[in-house]
Image (cartoon, rainbow, N blue to C red; front, top):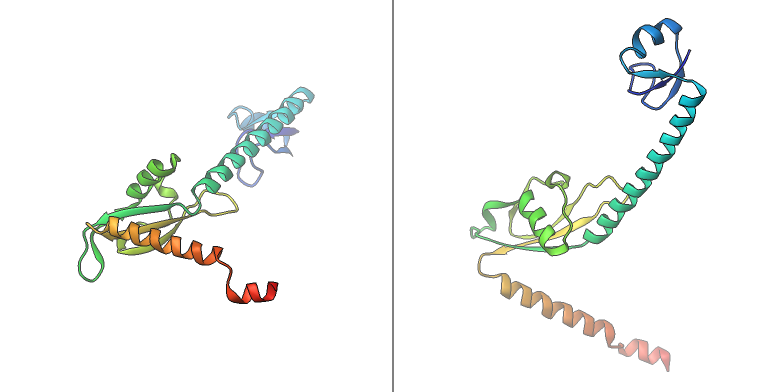
Length: 180
């Protein structure tokens, strides 16, 4: 007898498959326990329609996840924490702190369990990958600075970026000599 599995059945198949099983197994176990339905022409047509809808929803979900991944990839998050002279924090920057700050900065809410770290316990720059289930794994740039030094750190970073942009924009002597 051909049946359409509604649930995964050990050693027989996964939900959504159309399989051939013994008549007694289907009538006495699979169908009464709602693990399968008999594969009639109308059941097969509705099953195919349902599978098309599932594929469409899966594609939409994948597109949404890719948009979120692109939106949060490379996002810079800054935290100010008390730290010892060695650079170790008194406490940590938790995954919940990171997701809350990400929500504030980008407006994108992700589950804290999607972060691949338990927490940040040292001052400095930390690159934190986010597991979203896509081909591309976005990375968050988390900067932890000492308490009271955030404004100074941000000003220094802005100056470094401006200097790098000026150096990039200004033609060098070698490139102008080659152009002549």
